[in-house]
Image: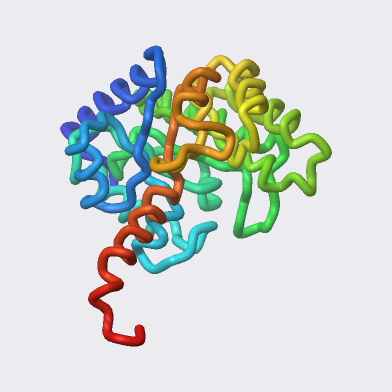
Length: 263
C-alpha cells in the first residue's frame, strides 16, 4: 500500500533532514531503538534522529536476528517506531530480505523510515555478496530512491571482519567494499567489528562519506572511546544490540532481589 500524499511529504522532509545531518561537521549519534518506548525515550533525551536495529527489533518480537524475521515482520515494527516519534528514523533491513530494490525502497518509505542499513551477508543463503553484487544492489536502491524523489540515506554495511576466515586482509577487503558502495550511492558506510583505532582511521580516510561505528553507550567501542573515535574522524555512531543489552542487564539487576528465594 502506497503512502498518502501527506504522509509521503512528511517522509520527504524527514529524509532531507537526515541527509543534512550526515553532511554537518562532528559526530552524529543515532541511538539504536526497537519499539515506540525506546524511540520516545531517546527523543526525550535530546536525540534528533534514530536508527532501528534488526537484532534488538527481533529480540523485542521474540524472533531471531539474521533474517529470523520476515520483511513483513520487520516493517511492522519499523512502522510502529516511525509513527511514534517526529524525528527521522533509519532502519536495518539486513541484506534486503531477498527483495528487489525498487520494492524494498517503496515499502520502507511507506513504513516511514528515511534511511536503511543494508549488509553484504545474505543469511538465508549462508553467503557473503561479492563486492560488485553488493555495490550493484546499493546502486539499485539509490536509483529507486531517486525515482521516488526521496533523499533516502543508504548506510552500506560490510561484514568483512565477521568473515575474516574468508579474507586474507579484512581491512583491505572492507576498504574495497565500502569504496564500491560509496561510488554506487551510499551516503554512509558501516564496517562491523573493526578491531582497533588504526583500522578505523584507515577506513575513515578511504571514503568521502561518514563511517558508522557500533559502540556501547556505556563503554564505547573495542576500537576506541567516543572521544577517540571522534578524533579519528568517525562521523556516525550507532549502538547495534548493545543499548538493549545494557538495559537488559540493568533490569535484571534491578528486579533480581525481588525474585522468589532460590531463583
